[in-house]
Image (tube, rainbow, N blue to C red; front, side, top):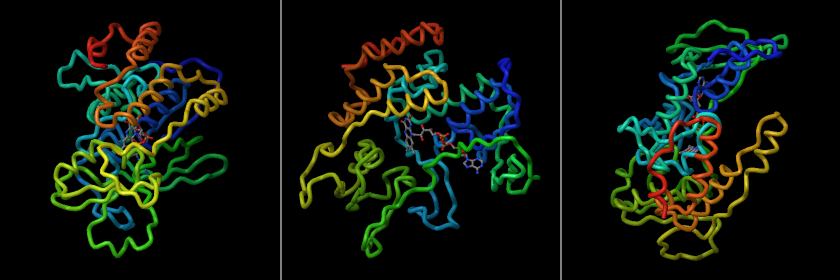
Amino acid sequence: MAPAQNPISSKQVAVIGAGASGLIAARELHREGHTVVVFEREKQVGGLWIYSPKAESDPLSLDPNRLIVHSSVYESLRTNLPRECMGFRDYPFVPREDDLSRDSRRYPSHREVLAYLQDFAREFKIEEMVRFETEVVRVEPVDGKWKVRSKTSGKLSNDEIFDAVVVCSGHYTEPYVATIPGINSWPGMQVHSHNYRVPGRFENEVVVVIGNFASGADIRPLLDVAKVAKEVHIASRGSEANTCEKLSVPTNNLWIHSESKYLDWVAEESGCLLVEPWRVQQVERGYKRLVSNPENYRDEWDDNDLIEEAYEDFSRKRLISSRPSYFPESGR
Ligand SMILES: Cc1cc2nc3c(=O)[nH]c(=O)nc-3n(C[C@H](O)[C@H](O)[C@H](O)COP(=O)(O)OP(=O)(O)OC[C@H]3O[C@@H](n4cnc5c(N)ncnc54)[C@H](O)[C@@H]3O)c2cc1C
């Protein structure tokens, strides 16, 4: 797509990372007429959605010399949000019924998210702006501009000067490891969820899951582990002290707060359109379903009205040519 005509003077911009944030940043900057270089240390676009069966050499990711693996995605991961509200505003994340290899579920697997991001990059020719296998190792301000040092395939490249740098390097690769007094005397293995891929290593083990939010409370890996482990205990700070209840689902400690006010404030400040009401409500009702039905919230839903609204919006804006056939039958 040709860059838009606009009064903003063209700048040289470096974008670090070609995950979801880097891709959309690169497209918008290019549309404004800037010259964009995207630095990406992997061989393809997609960021954390590029699944790797490899985990880091230190399962807690504390060793500064460990082998770093960017993705935190585990093998059986499906999204925790409906696909309609995950897509970019003008490039809906709709099922690709023309391609049978694709996952058309409303909460698809991680592979489908990667395929969507790669479709987006292809559609807007973003890969042409990306320097793959090139890692930014230093950024520093110099005379009102930015000096960017990068390494391609392990070899240092020249420093380059940019007018602006957009950092889209992701924030899950450096895991937060809680300080727990006495944990070092724990005789068993310790693994951060960033390094969880498959349940095999927990066979016949007694497992304690520490934390009960997006990762800890995700029923999919819990059930995967519970199938092979001897026992699984979820340690939740939100539960009443000294209780030990055999739960079918861990749902007594999750509260829902609306993000939309903050997002609307950001949109207003930057002169962008506000978040569509159907998108806000899909997130809110999705989280309510997660709390009330963690085992099946991805396959059973009661918000077909919101799906209808989303698809009407996509049609009105001419973002899709036809509606997918799957959704009216799937919700209950
Ligand atoms: C386990 C898990 C599940 C999730 N599930 C969902 C979900 O279901 N729905 C949802 O909407 N969101 C989900 N998220 C949130 C997710 O973080 C966002 O959806 C989004 O993909 C983040 O994109 P990003 O571009 O910010 O970062 P990333 O996808 O992490 O991309 C960062 C990119 O920067 C590159 N990079 C980093 N440092 C450098 C460097 N120095 N030089 C060059 N390149 C560099 C990396 O290689 C990577 O490609 C999930 C997150 C996690 C961890």
